[in-house]
Image 1 (cartoon, helix red, strand yellow):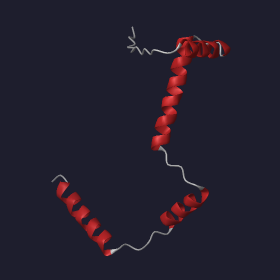
Image 2 (cartoon, rainbow, N blue to C red; image 1 turned 180 degrees about the horizontal axis):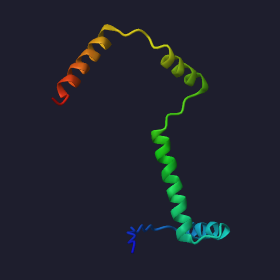
Image 3 (tube, one colour; image 1 turned 135 degrees about the horizontal axis):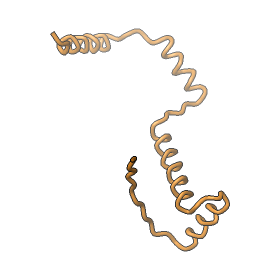
Image 4 (spheres, helix red, strand yellow; image 1 turned 90 degrees about the vertical axis):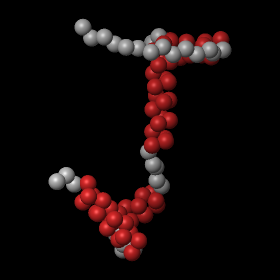
Length: 95
């Protein structure tokens, strides 16, 4: 037997918003609860995607790709940083 755990979400809304949500749910042939859950889930996913996905213009995409394909020469500071990193990695290797 599989047990499903659920959480409850409650919100106080105006009668007008309740009627609007109920009408939209009816149009989709859904219950108010299912409609609300789907709408809230989609909104949450959009917010998370917007916060985590970087969107670049065509020009910026081309600039980024060129930087990856033709990186600038390593500066002395970058070379020192890589050398320090390599030493740290060597120290962490198990014997």
